[in-house]
Image 1 (spheres, rainbow, N blue to C red):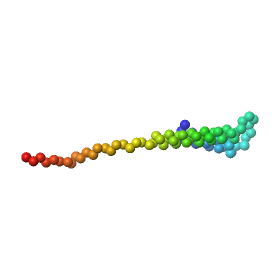
Image 2 (image 1 turned 135 degrees about the vertical axis):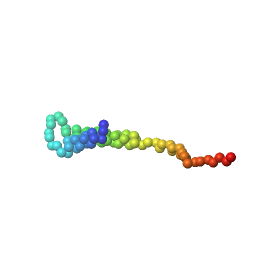
Image 3 (image 1 turned 90 degrees about the vertical axis):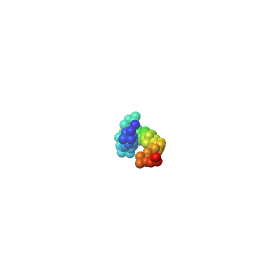
Image 4 (image 1 turned 90 degrees about the horizontal axis):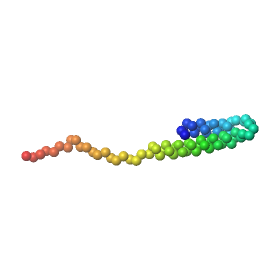
Length: 76
C-alpha cells in the first residue's frame, strides 16, 4: 500500500464521515468513513516506518588511502 493510496483512503473516509448526508438503508456511511480513515492512517504509519527503515544504511567502511606520490630514493 503506497503513500498515495493511504492518503486517498483518508480523504474518502473523511468525505464519507463529514461531508455526505446521504441516508442508505442498512448502511452507516459515518462508520464506513471512520473505518477507511483508520485503515488509511494505519497504512500511512506502516509505510513511513518501512520507508524510514529502508533508507537507513549502515556506514560504509572507510576507503583505503592510496598515496601515489610517495617516492623512495634508493642510495647506491
